[in-house]
Length: 160
Image 1 (spheres, rainbow, N blue to C red):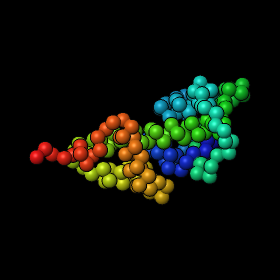
Image 2: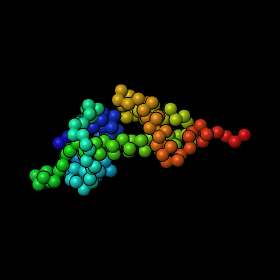
Image 3: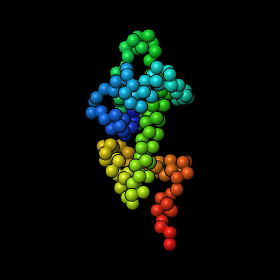
Image 4: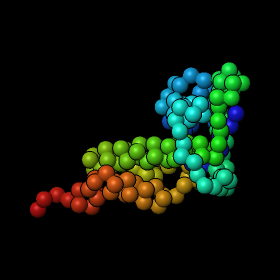
């Protein structure tokens, strides 16, 4: 089977799961957190909220190939819906930004620049053509703000 994904999120998934391009993600046994969430979602153990829209936008242009348990498929226990696809992509999005935030916080504590870490992360994912620096920077800022983590301009100032 396959699941539509946003291209940079698919690259993140492949990076996190250490998968080669074109490699199939086997969710018949949950080896990592992404496979676990996807397996639960497709077997309706994790319920996605139903969206009003039925058609996925064009940004879901990449395909994640997955291997599923044939018995569950034959019994009708596998459900791939637009709501599930959106839920899974939202999970990947949040996971990516949590990992990026952790990297940024560690690097800033070592005296490195946030921008350098974000650029390095984009290159490491191989997503230079899929997501902009500004999009990740803004998302990182919003996540820090929602978690009440100080803005780096004031966080890095030394007492005078």
